[in-house]
Image 1: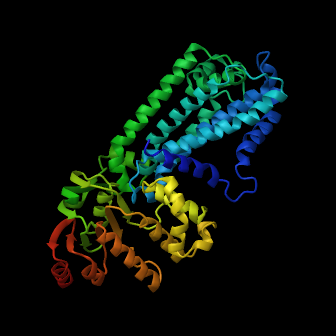
Image 2: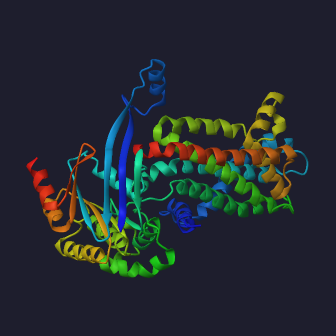
Image 3: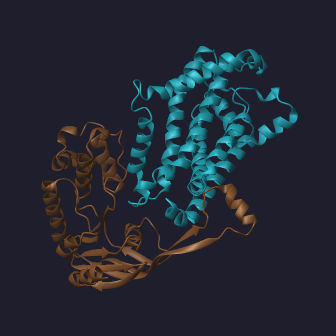
Length: 253
Length: 241
């Protein structure tokens, strides 16, 4: 592909720039989820650990949730922001602007995969064996990257047109986070909440991810179909919306 | 052979009156039927073509549509009506160093800027030392760009943008980069690019530069072509206006 080199540079830039002035640099990508998980584990393990089905360990359960949520949250915000923040370039040099959003999603994906290493260690320590389905994690990652890139593309148009969207999306993402079983088992909720959580697309991604990595959840056929539908829908909708509104939006940059 | 062909190009911006960029106000105005959208015509029925080796200067007051026209030529802004075709590689020097990042080193910025313009990573990496040398910043290439002086940044950007022979150069007031020495050097490089067949579209307020460089001039006023032809005549008419 003609723009593969540019995408690689952009992903690289996004991964390294954030830590440019820090001592351990990209090491923070490893350390961040570990530290967040450690704090949440300390806070919630008394409450929730005993509520998990037997054979499921709380520490890897929690950390898997955090990794996936970080990927989606950061990836989406960066993808949505990428076009506005690179407006200076996009109005001077012709490159397909979608490349910036896609690169942001891919940077999120890379971070997600880097996070697999500390997650594997946490699994090992807590005595949760890795599953032979581990390669399927790749599939979940790609599916989530498609969802992130698709939603990010659509949002990027909104971000340029209306400043408010950024704040609205921040709130929505926070609600979505609490509706995803990141640090609690679904069974602690009442049945209405369980239904809502069930229809939250991120729940399907997370269930499949936990199951594929270390057999730490029980996804159903529904989870797979629901995940695929959302990923395909998001990327098609995102590219369509972007293509349709970009010519009028570029003038606002 | 025409390298650039612009036919009946119109560009209209949609401007939201009392635009505040806030969703709430948009909703409120829409409910009251007050969301007035005004079409602002930036370019109107602009047609011209540029041949190999030609230097076309675009004149006009602020807001006449010069920058919009360059953006259309660069392919960044799709025209609302009409077509703009460029055959060949473009070196967009609309703003030197678009895409430069202060935290990246000189070399990294050269690489990124070049790849943005469609060059190959491998060949750029080979060329980087030569680019740094030409810009006179060899000793600084491994330091972050924020440690460069603004003149150094501009020189590095110019050196990068003009490092490869391209069919089209789009220039927006960037001929006044650096000190006198560097200006002479960059002028010589422009001349050599032009003599080896590049077509140049140049936006400038510097009339003596236009007289000296241009082979043709286009005078834009309020988005339409007011006059097109010999630079001497167009500049004289523009200055008399």
